Length: 319
Image (cartoon, rainbow, N blue to C red; front, top):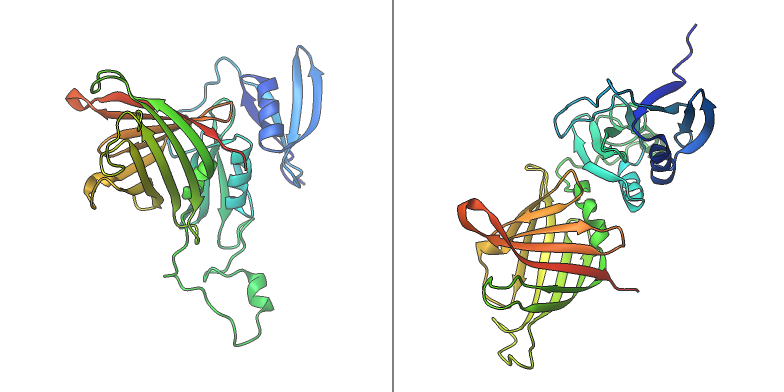
């Protein structure tokens, strides 16, 4: 009798690069790396599991299937008991998520990408499926069995919880020194900017708070008022996530004026890892290989285009 599935073939274009991704990025264990004719036979294993992935060269006539952006390319579905902590751990190792963890009617669902851009599903399943094991009211069977009779407290369905997708922005948390320069003739001569900025989680985890203290040009040469409209700019922005639209939302406040609709932006995570926020202007945040970030600001141009305005580079401050 068949007792189970032991190995699964994973087609890859570059076996060595794939091996580095699955071991270094995903934390899998290398089980076998042997010669197999003119090729290599590589097997890796997920932590605490017996199933083996065979990293096999993809044949020329074996293209990656075409699917919608929110679906996986691979037929492999991975499972984890705590998908949010797994998302944070893998993200810290450089693993990109095309879709951060989000709760669906069937459980938690996320999509991560390998080094070749192939998307895989990562789940935390409800209704007794592996990795979740929760009853219909949301409490685990272990929680119920350990509660004294008559004292079980059901979690209210109306109790709000932070959106896991917002944790995609965890790489921003910390203090940064930022420098940039406006593009010449947009308008007038180029103007340098220097800023000290910080990101931190608001208690409760529903919002990421961004504070900045910026200097445009030379305050000594342009001794205008600090605010509003002067060379020194200070402000605060709140980042949240709207599950109904699947997009980030930001709202900022500064000393240049009262509340106005132009202080709100909407953003999304692109497949290439960039964060793009659009409002009265547009800014794009990109993680660089050297630990810095770039934040490229654009202003509206003609015919619904965007024109570069102020590229900036963020350097993380120690401590």
